[in-house]
Amino acid sequence: MDTVYEQKNQRLPRVLCISLDSNLAKGTDGRLGDSTRRVMALQSVCDSIHIVMRSFHSAIQRESRLGDRCFLYPTNSRGRVGFMADAVKLGSEIMRRTPIDVVYTQDPFSSGVVGYVLGRVFEKPVVFSFAGDMIDNPYWRRESPRNRFMNAVGKWLIKRGAGFRVCSASEREKLTAMGVSQERIHEIGWLTDFTRFASARGEDVRARLLVDRFDRLLLFVGRLVKQKNVHNLISAMKIISESWNTALLLVIGQGRELADLEERVRRLGLEQKVVFLGAIEHQQLPEYFAACDVFILPSLYEGNAIVVLEAAAAGRPSVSTDVSGASDAIIDGTTGFIVERDNPAQLAGTTLELLRDPVKAAEMGRAARSHLLAKYSEESILKGYHRMFLQASETNGHH
Image (cartoon, rainbow, N blue to C red):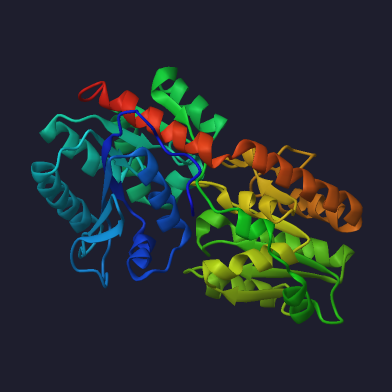
């Protein structure tokens, strides 16, 4: 991604990032995925970026370079607990030999613990990314004892952050309700190359999947885990198929819920109406978004709703549950619809409304693309990061 904004005659911060995204490793062999493009774009607003990346079996064994001012350090840890210890050790080595102004973490949980420790030891400010609605979310807390423990950890860390990056108004409101002052909260969107989605064509995908049996294509893209609540989508698809027998649901992604989802499809007699495609390369995703009539996100909670933005870039309306980022990505009733969580009847009814009125669906898709382009300017996003890092660095330590 070529950046459109370069800082001139302004101080550029030196940032240490604690990342949980092992996809960054792909950038070292020339495969520029979305994660790599994002951090490379950030180079234009930083003097240097040093990324400690959680990895368990990475092909990268030591420091590598992602760009002129971007360096990657995989932890190659044995597990989650091991990652935190390894990341503190790696981060300490970096901070002893390299001047760092700000520590930036991917979340206020495991990476946040690492950032907090480094900030305390080296007396540097820590900025937490708060991109999601996990804190105090009953669905997330019920999933596991670990989540309940991390919920408490996150709330404790939030009181100690010098700054926070959020992606939506709902996240800002949650932090404000927890006592975080407005000036420490920075609402910054996602750095994503939406042009690939805007220019994609889906005719070949439609011809291959719909053949002569179907005339509408519904799409889900994401991990097949409890969080995404694809079971709810399958239940909604049963209702949809009873009213619109020529709709096909395409599920792209993989995860531990796959076998249960396939069994649910069989029990509901939807084997011919639901296709599990598995994981595909990110470079191929745009043509699937362009091929669909409606994109559906049935999640119980979200770290982000970036797939809804990708659907918008492709000019397609979305039906999403009311999760973090949905109300920012979707103008309800204009660019798509926002529905209740875990309500298959409402999800089905809203989707059917779009299937029955393709003219309205197309109008919503065009409006979604216009909304996206107006709201998610790369220049304004990069300015937001620069402002956030500089403001935090001026606190000279923890809040």
